[in-house]
Length: 130
Image (cartoon, rainbow, N blue to C red; front, side, top):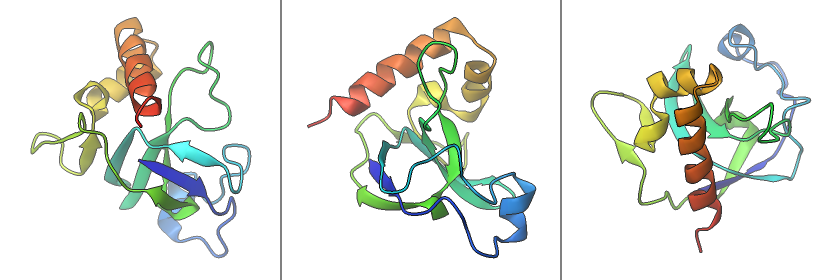
């Protein structure tokens, strides 16, 4: 799945965007740049739907995790989801690889080497899709 950033500023952002810290995406996204989506989370924070993408700060060394960014900053340019994405009742609202379910995403943020390695594999598989 691929998306394109359409804006980094939301005029009159809804309260939920402000509460989750995403009233703008300046410094995280570049307008017209395409991003690979690694997962989708419905109602990620305060009812905000978000895509898991590697923002502009990702460098795979000291900033090695993707970030959930509200979908309002993007337009979908390729809606085909990878075959390894799953939807489970154990993780309502989450669509993506089992290796990045919300509890494992927290481990990724905490620097868990096993989960970092799993994300790198997922990233490569996602980018190698025809």
